[in-house]
Length: 353
Image (cartoon, rainbow, N blue to C red; front, side, top):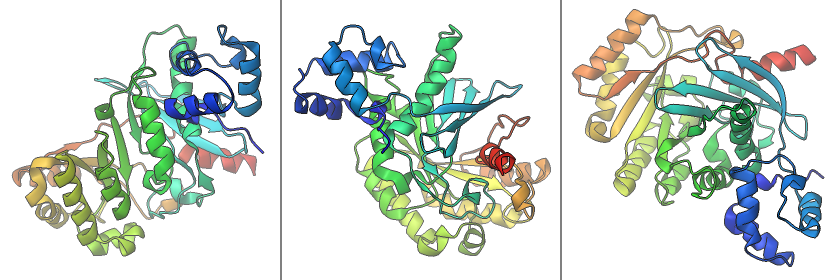
């Protein structure tokens, strides 16, 4: 049986483990400092810990569960990583250089069962959830990337939008967010982290009451049930009426803005009537909503979808703006590498066959 990554423990959980194993509580802060401030890779590097404790840690945990397989660096500074896990499954992580800092997009599941018809992530059905430690390790691997180059840059923002449905792995994702937010560790601000969901209504409502000020993004992609159901099977279980009810609940509970992600697909969801329908759908929420119009990264396995033209995207944008809907056309990253979620993993899997 594989040993878990110590990255998966919150400070409280680490403290509890130490006490249960006959160790002093103050060791928690020492270990935390070694992991997240000094960022060591082996337990043996934790110089101020007694040998007996190091042996206990090594017998129970590993630090890094990821093996770097492929690194693709884009001309715009985007870096895409393919990691192999202890059980030989592969996941992707993406570093994007933004004007406001370094943003990392993490994966939360091996495969995905949501079944969006345009998405490369779902080409492999869900095999299992990632542990909190495996999600944390993605951030640490990216941070090590800069540490090794003696660059003083640090990961400042996180988006949970990689392969998988984060709210289908709710508890591990919440632990991950708490570990990243811990002020004695990487101390990434809650408002610098965003979780995206395809629309798991019960978990949206649960997320609304968790007390963290982490941002919420909804993968909407269509302004009506007919179009959305044709693209996203999840809309059968949670149609727009239920989804918008959950969004209303979230806004009422948190008074925080919700971002709607909208991938632009030629002659599928990008017509002027779709823009007006979207504006009508959001009109009573426009003060606390924001629409991200996303140019589509074509996926060879889904060749029935093509990206919308620049003219159609701008026309769509103009209709939203005329209806006073806050929106932006998302900047593209990594267009000269395997840009879409799941593409790099899919390509690697084909090579291995």
